[in-house]
Image (cartoon, rainbow, N blue to C red; front, side, top):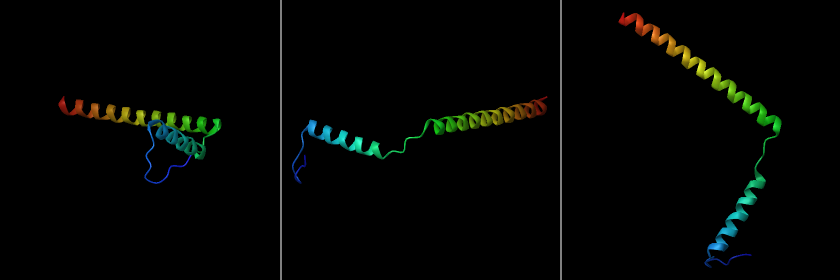
Length: 71
């Protein structure tokens, strides 16, 4: 179904065209394998734990310094 230039589509025609375009774009997507998803998930969890630990240690250190200064 091609639409001549300047011809307007109705609501359902536009929706149909939009879904067709979305389907075409999703076919181009590189979907990760189960192994890649597992690897990426582990990397994210490790990174979150490391950053949380670093923030916790900095907080402890600064709290200790503030207590020393105020007492």
